[in-house]
View 1 (tube, one colour):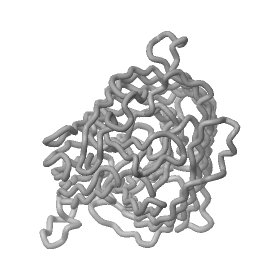
View 2 (tube, one colour):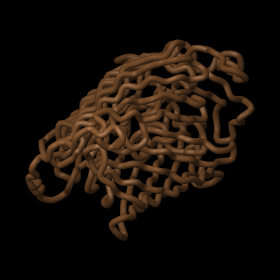
View 3 (cartoon, one colour):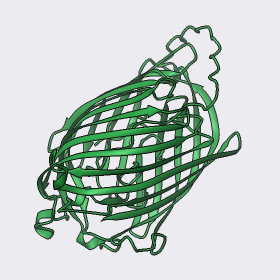
Length: 435
């Protein structure tokens, strides 16, 4: 449950607590759309001598861990972080264990290795747990990210047990007073294979198999899901097999820190309880688009729009529905609304839109790499709805806020995002851009 360190997180770090949902489309993002220039060789410089009065020369950086989340409460701890860089001062490995305390689950620790052997390949392993309830093991491998080869492949194995997941009921007007909590335990594997038709076009197939167990539990002042929503589909143990086909058009100039270009994904899929598709849980169809424009070098205007439908549902578990809330937008999954906790709103269909102004305000060389600091005011808006005939851009929930980001190109983005919605202020810390 611990968040990754601000300024020193990487895109493949520990998964944040969230109800299970359809996995993201296969990594299908071209680094560039034209000929790839060969990097200029740079002679390796000797590391500076350690000066204990100058933290930028320390071999291990003790990063304070302060994570505040609408669902998880306040987590405090320390992350002794070691950065490994190459001759171009680019981070190739991050070794970042953490030691932390959470008011709900006590003391805990995690081990974390994030590796970027090349711009085309990356992998990560994260494992850990706390004194009570929570534990995780996440292993991720991705290759072919630049689409210079015929295929892009991603494989992830995940076990996660979280004790702070929330459910408020169904619909765009579900009330905060109906808040309940549950233990979300899942184990599964996601695999994606993308056929790179060109630098810009890709046809991708995604398969996910998972076992999800939803158990009643309580936190101080919050009743269990079984006490208020007994009999809701998804409580207990559910199995899911997901098949999805996606068509991707992507002209972004970077897979992690884009400053120009766009990514558009159109997809359709079916989820079933077993190999027999006649016993389908739901069918899905949707589109996701992300646009980036840089009017001048220090500013990036980032926009995002997502629309998802579930045309048919057969006893679908609540966590398999479209959802809105939290700090991350996943293609085919939960969408960003940073004034509310993860998956605050559930229903069959969803719409979301986001706008950020990512302004670089300071740059420095520290810890053997180059770091940029950004301030990013943002607007998030969206809704969930039940009927396909509903006009999706009415009765929207809106959030206004500001983000603070630390960036170490080409692979590292860490953030603190503060948003205000109708239910108050929410603070998120973690890794990567929300879109």
